[in-house]
Image 1 (tube, rainbow, N blue to C red):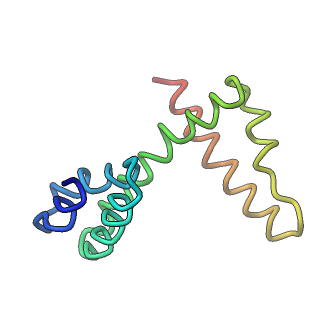
Image 2 (image 1 turned 90 degrees about the vertical axis):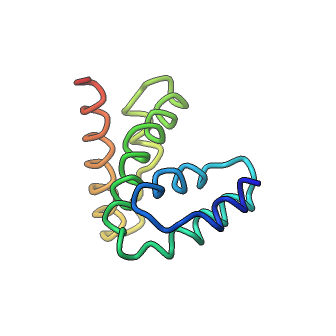
Length: 108
């Protein structure tokens, strides 16, 4: 039923959040349907990306942090890439993003 709803929901800006929430559904078919449906929202791409950023910067980083018992340094060590210079640059960007999300959470 969830999959059918995602596949047939009207393409409006106010439903993007609902479709986006189905990308973490327990059923793989529902998740795939949600990603396929989001691909049709090109004119709302900015909104979709903003919602994805919100998800990544809060629940996802919090879940990662819980895996390391709240130790941000251990989390950062675990995601370190250092095979070459390009990996180091990517790691720096990732660190900046994670630390920004972490510090924003601490200020709440």
